[in-house]
Length: 164
Image 1 (cartoon, rainbow, N blue to C red):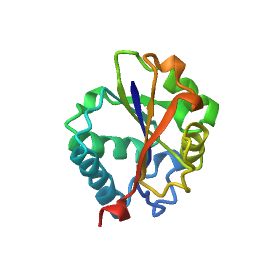
Image 2 (cartoon, rainbow, N blue to C red; image 1 turned 60 degrees about the vertical axis):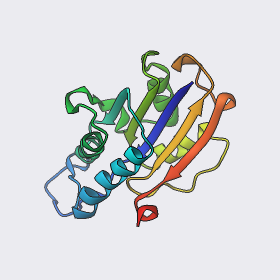
Image 3 (cartoon, one colour; image 1 turned 180 degrees about the vertical axis):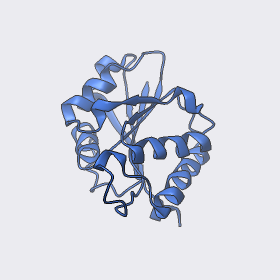
Image 4 (cartoon, one colour; image 1 turned 90 degrees about the vertical axis):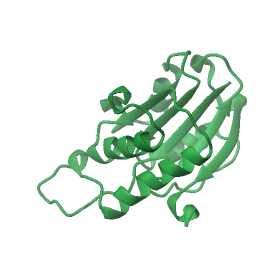
């Protein structure tokens, strides 16, 4: 059994005109929501084997804040440039290349692709994921290479406002 958590990065700031989209940091709400969702995952006793993040600053910051709440070592966060402008097939390729000794993987990415990717795999349709939302999917497989819609079970969908 493999478990995949798909997370949209937390709310980012638009206050810095001189920064590129990829360099935008989290805003105050994002800095609150990311650890909130990390705590929500911790309450579910989630133990990550692998955390993968987009290289965008807002995604890496989200990943780091969630990692801290889950006691996942910051140095083990895998940052992939190709998540930043990925398509659904790109994310599927990334997931299928995860090491098979990792049973529980969190991937932090961007909308609309993270929502589209979740919906491409899940038997349950997920509404557009708000910032810092998490979808959990479980796969009845032993190898990530075998992940496919036909072996996917929807487990949960959670988001910051659901925690209040």
